[in-house]
Length: 232
Ligand SMILES: [Mn+2]
Image 1 (cartoon, rainbow, N blue to C red):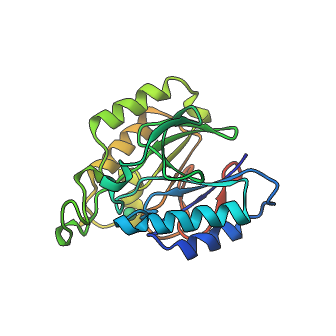
Image 2: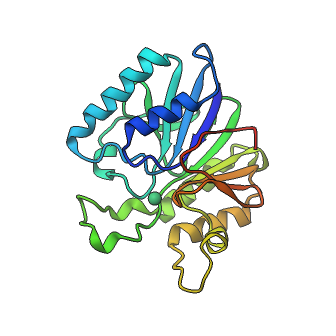
């Protein structure tokens, strides 16, 4: 299976389909596209239509391809948690449909030939303007339990061969990206910083900052492009 990564989608399914179309692979190849957080679907109860639409589009146009996503900060966690959790790729996923799966925080998967550690979530910097339970959720940021589960799961793989996928970046990378003394580094970035200090991951990919660029040693920020894992 070939694995591609992309950045924030924010519920724009047409944009997401364009990203699928940009993937240079044939319909006969197995492909997984992973969104690095802020898929943004489902946001409201009616978004089941968006899930069905995308699932049908994949089944019709790319029958061997699937969509995977880690969580960002702009997700409706109450709705996401309603989907059934099941084992897939050597870890636990939430199944939104036959074609769409949530790669949960703290899980380590083997997707294609790639060991992949997932640690989604981030602080919403606009959370003051949002309402808890309808446009903001406290669990947008990882907990200590998520962190401990990831470390436990990392015992089963070789970290140096493992890719780290997160929504925001580690503190140092955030400071490098945004600069300035007035940047507030969130708890999630601190935890990712600790992780990158403790483990020498093969490569780290993240989204959240709406830009595509190399962001540090073995660290890449992605937005609206697709990047094939293994070509870094
Ligand atoms: Mn975000």
